[in-house]
Image (cartoon, rainbow, N blue to C red; front, side, top):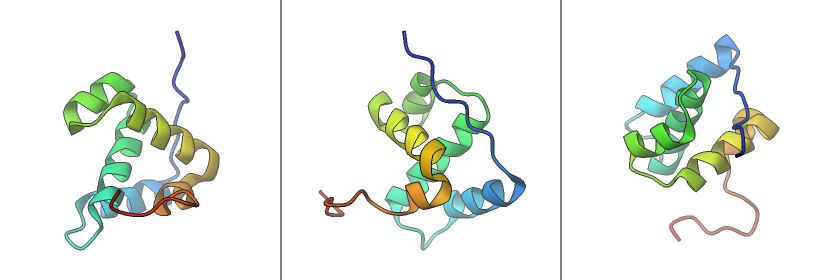
Length: 86
């Protein structure tokens, strides 16, 4: 069984992610990504995050790993070659 990457946030990262997760004008995909990372940093397992946010565990794992690798920039942008809305 895989072990999820541990997420530790700086104070600035937590502030930015919280702002994104609550922003009314923030794109919904970024709101979801921010909520995933915040829950990950709080020690919630991928399955629990997926259940609470109504998404797939694979989605949670993707954004947790992308944040661990590229931090805020990793979740702020779509992957190269991806078209938003598809």
